[in-house]
Picture 1 (tube, helix red, strand yellow):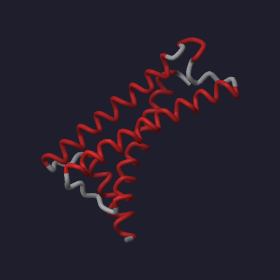
Picture 2 (cartoon, one colour):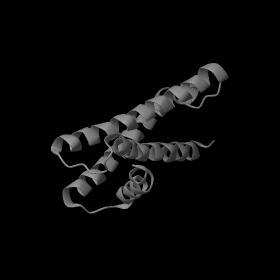
Picture 3 (tube, one colour):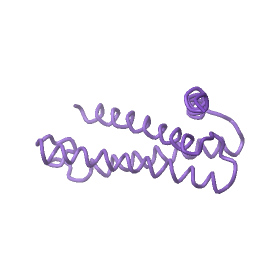
Picture 4 (tube, one colour):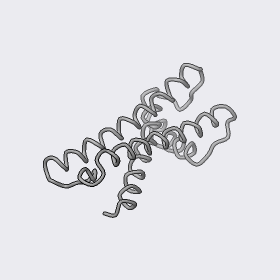
Length: 130
C-alpha cells in the first residue's frame, strides 16, 4: 500500500480502538459518569495507556510481518525506525487530542461527536443490559 493509505488505515483502526477504551472504562466501572477528581485522573490515564498499548501492539505486528513473512510493513530497509516512531507519535498526538476533548467536556459539559458516540453506545449496549 502507498504510505499515506497505510497510515490512514492505521489511524482509523487506532481511533476505533481508543474509542473502545473509553467504552471499556465505562463498562468496567458500570457507569458512564466521571464524578470525582480521582475518577477523572484514572479515566484519562486509562484511555491514554490503552491507546499507547495498542500502538505498541501494532508495531509488534508490523515487526512480526517483517521477521517471519519478509513483508516490510515498517519500511525497515528504507526508513529504519522512522516509520515506527512516526506511528507512535501519531498515536500519542491522537490520544492527547482526544484527552483535550474529554477534559473540555468534563469541565463545561459540552458534548462533542466523540462523547455522544460513547454515551449512546454505553446507554444502548451496557446500561440497557444491567
